[in-house]
Amino acid sequence: MRPAMSVEIGSLKLRNPVMTASGTFGYGEEFSQYVDLEKIGAFVTKGLSLKPRAGNPTPRIVETPGGMLNAIGLQNVGIDAFIQKKVPFLRSVNTPAIANFFGYTPDEYAELAARLDAIPEVAALEVNISCPNVKQGGIVFGTDPGCAASVVAACRAATQKTLIVKLSPNVTDIVEMAQACEGAGADALSVINTLTGMAIDLERRRPVLANVTGGLSGPAIKPVALRMVWQVARAVKLPVIGIGGIMSATDALEFILAGATAVQVGTASFVNPGAAQEIAEGMEQWLAERGIADIRSLIGALEG
Ligand SMILES: Cc1cc2nc3c(=O)[nH]c(=O)nc-3n(C[C@H](O)[C@H](O)[C@H](O)COP(=O)(O)O)c2cc1C
Image (cartoon, rainbow, N blue to C red):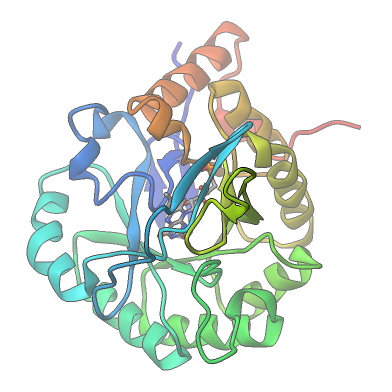
């Protein structure tokens, strides 16, 4: 018998727990020739802002041992072009599309949440309070629990859809951030975004990235992400979406054991554009081989 693979995140029902991570899967269409979108649970679109953004100057990506650094600077088409040019594709696929977004003030966050709420093709919202490469007006929503709560509350008031809050790992206490978001009305938490890092070109005696620092992703961050997912899942009642260095089905299953209800695959899609689908299939096969009837029996089932 095939194992039951479906999970729920708020009111969102997923056929399996594997999604693609924001910023690593375009707006869905770009990867549709490599991945059968109906074989993954959901896909998350590139972070949207009210106005289009050109992003940071180049170079803005560098490979590092075990991962990559990016300082894309949240380049995106903006909400108007998203509605005109990207939403028609979302209509054509039978897989939930989750819109990731960010603003510079709680009002901007709320306006985006309201506009995305009005789009039937958007199944759920993922609010990025991390913005690791963009700082505006001295407010860093992702590192102050009070600021995070005000942003989440503003978005909560603006949408009926499942509201996922994506947390930054660049904090002293991720549990405090998670609890602030839970208290402000989040339906789920995505854990984690990238870790701030840098790379240096020794001969040129310069930082490799034009932005100097960037966000580290890939296998290098998996142990940190696993630890944070485990900590957060024990401290809140909300479903947690595990993210960070998931390259294989076994990586994904480790996150589920640590307490994640679902996972997102990011950097792996740059190495192998079909990674998310292969990971979903590999998870199902792993369960089938062991006679495990339902993926949900593994959520938080870490022993010891
Ligand atoms: C090139 C690139 C762009 C990204 N853009 C976004 C973004 O727009 N919004 C967001 O919330 N996260 C963004 N992320 C973070 C990823 O969604 C994910 O949280 C992170 O890469 C860790 O997962 P991974 O190790 O599987 O890549 C981006 C990551 C990369 C590598």
